[in-house]
Each structure stands twice: as C-alpha cells, then as structure tokens.
Image (cartoon, rainbow, N blue to C red; front, side, top):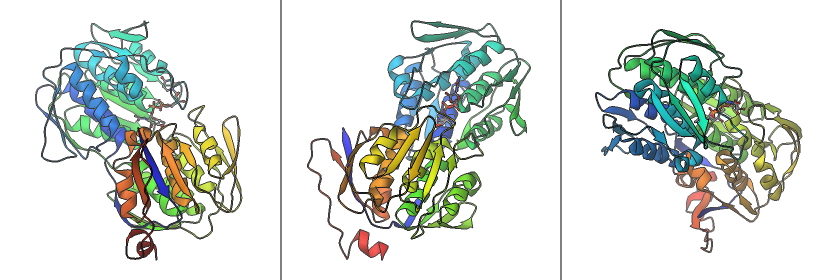
Length: 442
Ligand code: UD1
C-alpha cells in the first residue's frame, strides 16, 4: 500500500492542467453498452482507478476495450456483450458500478447488479434508482445481496425523485433512452456531469431535453447511432487545486477547466480571501491571501457548494482567522477527515451534520490516514500547509480513485511530496534553492 509523504510550508506556484471529469466519464463509458453497432470513442478520460474498475466491469460483461494511441482516449466495442451481471467485488470497490443497470436494462431488458452496501461517507442506498426502474415497467427483485431487474419492455413514465440523485438521474435517463414513449424526470440532478452525458447520448441519436432546470424529458428512440464524445473537465480536481493555492498562499494558473461550473467554489474561495482572476472560459488563476478569512460552508446539490469539495474547504478553514460552520447536507457521515485534520493541529468540533472549525495559527505534520477519496485530498492539502514536520498520508489508494498523478502535478507546482511504499523509509528532499520549492515560490 502506498503512502504520500509531504513536507509542507511552501507556496505552490505555476500552471496545472486539469483532466477529464471522473463523474462524467463513468456514465458515458457505461452508456456505450447501448451503442453496439459501432465502436464508441470517448476522449479526455482520466487515468484513474475508478476508470480501471469500470473498464474491468465492461470487459466482464463481454465488451472489448481497444488500445488507443492517445492515453486519455477509450475505444470500446460492446457488440460482444453476453453477460448481464455486475459482481460484488467490482461494485464494492466502486458504487458507481450500479450505473450499468440503466443501459443493460435498456438494451438487453435484464441486469443483475450487486447491492453496493454502505461506504465511508454514509449508507448511500439505491432505492430511488430501483423505484424509477419499476415506474418504467421493470420487475426489480432484491435477493442474496443482488438486484435483479428484468422487463419485457420499458415504457415511458413520470418519475419524481424525492431528492435529486446524480447517478440515479443518469441511470434512469439511460434506461428511458430506448424505452417506448416519453419519460419525464422531475427533481432531476442538475450537475454538469449529467448534462455532459445527455450531450453525448443526444449526439449519438438519443432525444433528451432538460426542459426546466430540474426537469428532464426523454423521448425514447428505437435505435442509437454512434457514441463519440470528449468528456468535460473535472470541476472537483479543479476545485482541489484552487484550494491548494489558497491554503499554501500560492499562485496557481489552472488550465483546461470549465469556469462556468466552478461558480460556487470561486465564490467561497473569494470570500475566504483568495484572489481569483478569470483569464478565459477555460483558464483561471488563484492567488492565495496571506490572511485566510473564515467562511461558512453548506453543501447541497449543484449549483450549490459541492459535497465533494467540503473536506478540502474544511482543510482551508482550519487555518482561517476565525470561526466557521461547515454543514454537510448531502451525506450523513462525511466528516471522517475531521479526526485526521485534528491530528495535524486543527481545532474542529462535530455536532450532527455540522462541524465548527476554529482557525489555528499553524498546522504541524503528522501521520494521518485517508478514509475516502475527498478526505485524502483534504489531508494532502493540510499536509502541504503544515509548516513543521512531515505529513504522511496512508491508504492513498482512495486518492488514486479520483486524482490522476496528483503528486506529479503538485511537485510541478513546487510541492515537496513523494509516494512511498508502506514499509519504505520516507526520503523527502530538502528544498533546494536552485530547485523546485523555494525558487518557484519566491
Ligand atoms: C454522485 C457522485 C459523488 C457525489 C454525489 C453527490 C458520481 C459517480 N458520484 O454520487 O461524487 O458526492 O453524487 O453530489 O457521480 N440517495 C438515496 N437513495 C438513492 C440515491 C441517493 O437515499 O437511491 C441519497 C444519497 O444517500 C445521498 C443523496 O441521495 O444522501 C444524493 O446522492 P446521489 O446524488 O445519488 O449520489 P451518487 O449519485 O451516489
């Protein structure tokens, strides 16, 4: 198991290029199940563990993932799909594996998918997905830890999600794409990743419209043509690097982003004192402030502040000049990073779904453990800002699920960070006046 070793206290300076969105890639990759006539081509797919998992899952269904000269391009042939089971070992590694339900039922009228069970950030049931599939006419049974779905045919229906669900909305859009008639999805998720999938499907012959902000209408079509899409940039990776600049009082230019999707993050970081300069629709610069201001954060579905940025923002608030409240409204148990941030010297108290963060003068390096994907990012950020001692973040496999070459990108910005094997003695170079950290941050 790998660990990340960080010597913090240096401002990050330079340019970083943001990769394609993990959460858009996953549904778009699985939607290839419905495009079996031609190879599907998907560009700007990040090289992440979650992407490897979804590729494994598609391969296990009988799809062929072809080699491509471009590292971030996937070419998928789904004409050989002859298995409709998503097994426990894949679903437990990544709950987004449940996304195969929609396209498998749409195309083959059957699917068997392991129930994902709980995860570090909460119970995360899939009852909304299953009830919506029932509304489309599918028979859904849960047996021995598996969901079995079959249908003679799917028929359009009105679906009203109790609360917006991102993968639930994506699953039902895919199921409705080849259904008979029209499906109206009310209280649909508004995340840009959902719209990216809709764009990809429409280009391939689907008929899907967001008629109001939270209402999506899917007119079923008989047949799809060809899936060929470039995935949108990852707004959470972008937000994480923006926060890295703010917490290290650095100066980072982010390239290959979609500024429009970052509004809630830009607003909060600006309130916290960072200077954000928008260079273009795909590039911005974040200059950290010497004095971080405390700001309250409350997570909610898009376009509000994303739960996937809560842990990173909390790391920033640990060094603010005052007191703030971080409220988590999406997942019930998404404060696993708190105990670890406290190990680095933070002052945080959790009450139910809110955390009271009192800014401290400094964080100090310590050994900490990543508990989930975004918690890992938060600990890396806190480690980069710790002004004395080394920070060692273990269980870094969580980070690898959602960040590509994180340590390489951070090193290029002047961070002193290295990946070591669990039993290796950490070797971290002293900052070199001719080398990365000091010269870049001067
Ligand atoms: C997606 C994202 C994840 C992000 C989350 C919220 C992907 C692959 N993952 O996860 O990174 O943190 O959106 O923005 O896109 N719920 C139910 N029953 C259901 C479905 C959801 O109760 O059937 C609840 C969840 O427990 C949660 C809320 O609804 O409290 C929203 O979850 P949801 O939007 O479904 O999250 P995911 O799609 O799993």
